[in-house]
Image 1 (tube, rainbow, N blue to C red):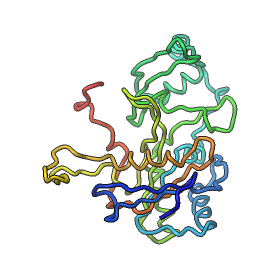
Image 2: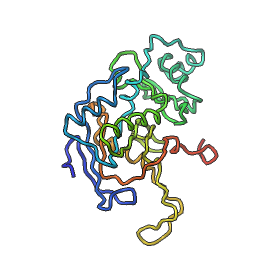
Image 3: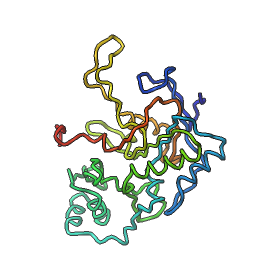
Image 4: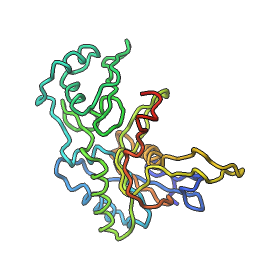
Length: 276
């Protein structure tokens, strides 16, 4: 086990997704440089692990903030290159937002769920359904940690494919079974605050189906289905600080079975969505 520090944490978790001892460790990979378009992100991660004497073990999971993936893949937009549409101009006036940002949000969205600005806000928010199916603020178009002025960063075009490519390179480099989770930070309906969620997966199950198993008192479970990928993503936020430049978190001790997973498996089907 690791001793908890600012960038390392250790905790116990119960349930069938963890080791028999119930111990999971996680630590941030420090020293990862700023990422730029066309950088070999997988190679950078492999070199970082090896330079710190870390050899991945069978079943380790690497949880990675999407921004380094997006940067490496060139998912960056200079606002100077954006011409707002009539719809963007109308929405921008309603929520007091740069119409160029609004245009990028519209391009990344299949629909706008709601546009609102509170009186205390300088700039309002668009709740959008992203082209990948996620419903989130501003279609996940973000300005933080981009490294350039008047520039926004988008989600990877295909986060699952990005995760699979990274996973394959890591497995080839270390010769063990590895999982990859790519995350972004989302708000949550009915609750304040932000948490990391899974937006791309390789081999790690999106959910664990516990229906038919029994709880600690012998009662059969009928609907229990932990979102393992989101649990890992949220836990990564404990050591993935916005200003710490630690975009990759290594988890060890999680018990999981490899599968052909996708972050889309965490999106509730429209026919089951009581709030759409």
